[in-house]
Image 1 (tube, rainbow, N blue to C red):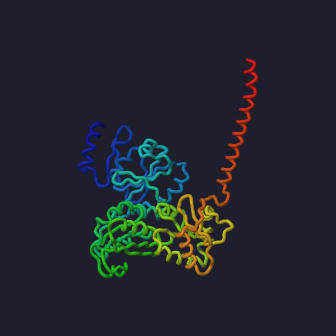
Image 2: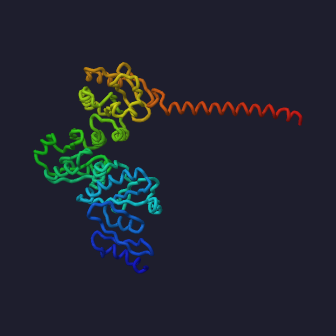
Image 3: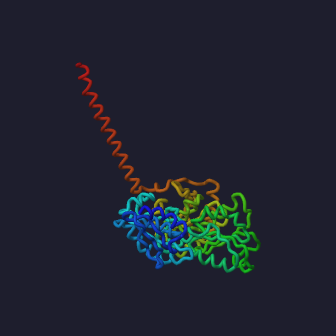
Length: 416
């Protein structure tokens, strides 16, 4: 056994094992265990005997640390089963594995697992926690993004088309036509989880027509999910470039839901939020078109919309009960929002002039600040009131009994 342990580093160093197979020193009695990369795209069950070998054998290993009794883990399992063969079949394969961290607690503890499920991507042995979507299709897109280069270098029209096709529709794309890779490398790394970045060294006039730019260098932003596209011609220094990239990560008008609200908070700009009765109302497209035009002229703000019917729980925090809709506010994405005096509601008809008046009122400071979630008594607010009354009652009782105690003590002191 001791001889095997001494030989293991040499075996790994000189590649004496067959491709896709790595030996591990785990297992009972220190026996060498082998891990063979699955070729059928199944989710691999790992334990303490073969985990280290798997990490060494696979460039990209996505691990689900789960517990058999965990409800979230049970719901996640079929999503991983669906994603596993797709990810294993990529040009850069990603293997999905799972570990019963409730049973193999030492292994879970080693990687800081303190809840289930905990998902981790091992990139050439280096672990990082994954906190993105767990739905199979979005999980695939997110992991493809994480293992891609920070900036892809494209050499021809065909490679540009292949890059765009492989990127899918869930992330914005940035293509730098004639842009030096060094100019966007920093942002490719910084915003890796949020967008695809590339530079095109050689391209035809057909590409210039397709992406609607007439000179270069030009950085083209494409948001395929929302069918939006914009071009940045520079300057490529200072904050100008990053401002363009950051603002292009979101569509001009953001449909506000549980997924996009985190993007709004991460963005840092205030949100001009329009609250509708129903996003599918027949007048909604006309209003959203007006908001998109306003967003084009006000890049320091983000424009979003949300329907009460689509997300009632969220809209109630802006005191929409009893309000006439659509309602328009400016939200700081934290604890406060502002309403513009005389422009709280949008009347049906000329939305353009109404939105313009709202923005003019906001810019000139004709606003009333309100607290999110405090416009009307909520369950949390009522509970807080009850707790306050209870604490005051206890304080009064303590003061009363304290006074009684002093009255009882005084005669005794006097007698002494």
